[in-house]
Every structure is written in structure tokens, then in C-alpha cells.
Length: 109
Image (cartoon, rainbow, N blue to C red):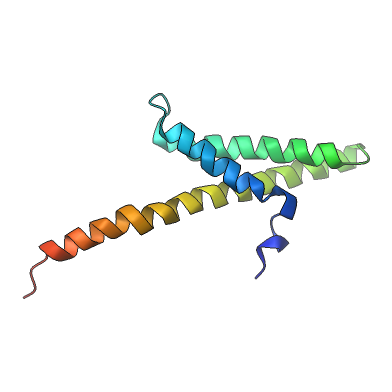
């Protein structure tokens, strides 16, 4: 399965944008961790919609509805990619260290 079937190639950079926004928000003491994916999703959706409107040649009512829907889907997919990438990094580092510590403290019967 090719990821380019789902996310427009020109919007793939939003995955990185979302990832770095998440890192910045994680370092903020005012933002609770559970809100970070929602913020990333909202930002990516807005950026995707703005981009799609900027490249559109015509703006009739039918085209506007399609652009908004596509922007929501593209923003959600790129936000999901950013959050998933962060989780992969976490599991490869923190999760692996926790697993190693658990194995060392487990008694074999």
C-alpha cells in the first residue's frame, strides 16, 4: 500500500510540522499532555485547508465543500502521522529501556 494514495505529497511536510509543534507543546508547562494531539490535529487541519484553498483555481460552492472536506481529512492524516511518529520514537527508546529493566528484575522459576 502506498501512502501517497492517502496523503497528498505536497502535504507530507505537515507530518514534520505537527511533530515539531508537539515537541514544543510537550516542553510547555501550560499545556497538558492529553491536549497535544488535539492541538496538532487542529493546526494541521487549518494548514491543509489554507493550502488547498491557495492552490484552487475556482471557488464555487461545490469546490469549497470538497476543499474543506479534503483539508480536514489531510490534516487529520498528517496529524496522525506526527503522533504515530512520536509514539514510535518513544517506544524505541523509553519503552525499550523499561522492558530491559523489567527483564533484569524478573526471576526465572
